[in-house]
Image 1 (cartoon, rainbow, N blue to C red):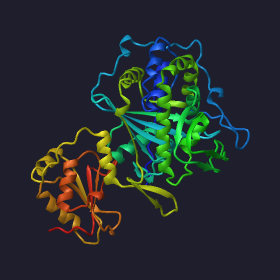
Image 2: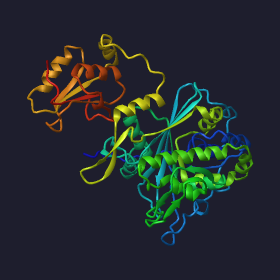
Image 3: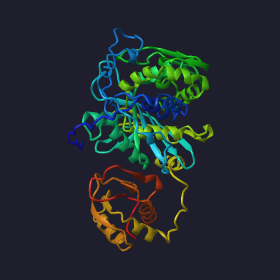
Image 4: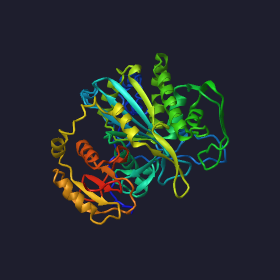
Length: 477
């Protein structure tokens, strides 16, 4: 059943000045580009009004099929009124981020086409994590066809979360539901989001003079979609190529290679790093400073974020100290997903959760603590205080009740028993709706649940923290 949250009023917009916005687009959206700090320091006394927490993305309609994308700098987005008050910057805002905890960002590239005003899908998703302690940055790309649980809406492609969040006016919008979906998949808290319309990406690349990409294989995509439901064929040769904004966007979006969506995620990271390499060249800084007003106009119409002004500044100042060798990029490729066809004929990528968890721990978690021995687990489990629900997924009458008695004797807090949605589960499943690793490990070892059958969820349907669906592989000893 689809739960449709009640409508809420949009949160007030965050007013970001020019140099803070340039940081968002050129630092966090492009692998935390360190050189944008120059732009901050040069224009930090300048301020301007803009609403970025929920702007309306507008794309001019194309006049004919196959026409080139229209630059957002020529859009009809209104400029700030001259008599609007300018936001001033507190003197203590321009300082390096003083926090020591890891900060995680979700970058969303929105697939919006001409004359569209309704809900939009995300064409690219990147999760970046910055660790102030080790001065390191990790970026994980998630293929748009990843088949995941969207909290409150069932299983679907991951790029549909943003659409559903907008369509049903989910609290916080599409980006909030996208964040919850990825948090449920990875078990990683997300602090900030940055949503960018493709027009903003195209113009940003053009403003830095294009990028240089080492293309590993020729790509011929006669069915590359334009922004108005037509086609704009795309071809690129193998080898080193210089791309303008429009070509860079096509290179990042096309799926006309053997690896499909996975290859595309890798190309998007290559484009991000190419942008970073271009911007960090010292002779690019004067050009960026001279074009600051144009950058501001572009990003005002095409970016939204929940970063506050001072947070953007401080994180950017921290980002400048990250050496290139401390930046790691990963993609959920075919080591972590496999192709599958849904009952309604859709081609999707199913996550291999055990492998994804290993990668998650490498990228987003601090050094792993020693694995507790089974003798330690009962006390560690009790300390977590997790409430466990048992659902019978078999035709064996009373299996959940008997298992409840069995687990309560071992101090497991079982708060609910019932029947699963089907009686045909061959193997038992465990879903952790939070962070209860010791409880889950205790249940895995006690019930003999295969580790691959352990997953995480967003919102439980009942008053519990961990759900166990008993399968035919389990009988009470």
